[in-house]
Amino acid sequence: MFHDGQINAQQGGASASLWLTDSIRRAGPAEDRRDWREKLRDWAEDVELVPDLGQRVGSFTWFRGLATCFGLCAAALYLSPGFHALPGAPQPLMPARQFDEVRSQMIMPLALGADSGRRMGPTDAVQPLRETPERPQIELRAQIGGSDSLGRALARAGVSGGDVATVTSLVAGDTGAGLKPGTPLDIVLGRRPSRDVPRPLDRLSFRARLDLGIEIARAGGVLQVQRTAIHVDETPLRIQGVVGESLYRSARAAGAPPKAIQSFLRVVAQQVDLGSISAGDRYDIVTEYRRADTGDVEVGDLLFAGLHRASGRGIDMLKWTQDGRTQWFEASGVGQRRGVLSAPVAGRMSSSFGMRRHPILGYTRMHAGIDFAAHYGSPIYAATDGVVSYAGRHGGHGNYVRLEHGNGLATGYAHMSRIAASPGQRVRQGQVIGYVGSSGLSTGPHLHYELYRNGRTINPLSVRFTTTSQLAGRELAAFRQRLVQLKSLRIGLPVQVAQKSAAPAAAGK
Image (cartoon, rainbow, N blue to C red; front, side):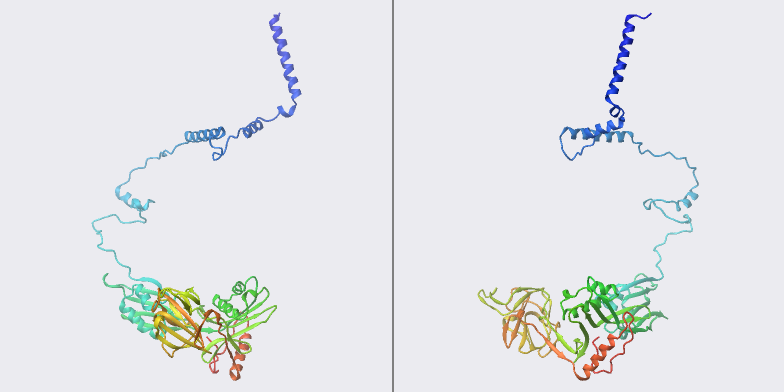
């Protein structure tokens, strides 16, 4: 029999079960069937468990993120396995002699005396050396530097003064004006009797010229020279191509040497504006090119510059020598040099032509030239060809040089520290005629440069020199023959061009 309390409990439980079932049925399957992971993810998005500690500093969220960070760090340190040494099996001891032999084959740090290979243990027959023995020979390679000589390069490499003098005398007739910068020198130094004397030179080999190799060897205690002639094919190189984005890049891609391209651009710039050259124009380059049997090459001067334009006048320029002067001529035989006077010194213009207050005299007067600020001792160049009409002291100008250029034009160069020209001397454009100084009425090193027309000073920046020459007769015929000869070369495969030694005038080299 059941009591009333048990019956009521059972009825109450049945009622609660019916209510829960009814609630689940009313709530629907979507909300109750969600996975607990999705609920946790939604909660984490609302709570922001990993806040940016660089923002909202001092807020509740920031402190909660800081506490989370410290908690994670503490957990990582607590759960770390540690860095204790791993126990190893004990090794049996070995005799000292055997350990000494094995130690040389161990892998040990150099600081702990590591060595390699088998070695002999110390015995009574082994004695320490007083000094280490020298190598019987030393092989090294030196190089000729800029404005260097063979003797200085050998001396830097450790060759004795006597051997340097002997080598210099042996090759004096082969090196000529000197070896080119960058020429390698293969040197072998032999055994010396003591450390107090330099090593003797056993062997030296180098390339004196493209067509000559020299080897100097010691035989019987005496240095002897052996010369080896190298065949050189002196063939002009012709390269043609179409201008793309850049004339320089297109020519380089076609295989033209950088030196030839730079010369080509300088020649073409005298005739047309380089900016007017467009894609589709064709360039034609012929340059001196020497190739030795050893594979070494030597690029010479530019011989011909041609530019055939899609729109506009074409250019055919040939390098030619007339009356001892080499210049560029057009295909018609007309030679012309255009341009303003070249700068007489490498420096900036510090004072212009006109009225100014004199820095020393203190009053305003005419400044009859332009000043160039330059370092003391900088070379001063002739602005164009001329004849020295005066060179010496000239009042307030100090050391002064005046050049006559013809047609009533002359130039003056003042305040020099040293004069490098003499009266009556003929000078070329760019030739050094003196050096910057501060002689005369001057407050510091600079060049005072003047230009005269019919004896009166004028503004040097207002005059342009133009010289023109015309080939005629036999010289014009030889010029045209040379032009046809160069333009008939195969592109990329140069053909031997006969030398014009019999002609009255030769193409410029």
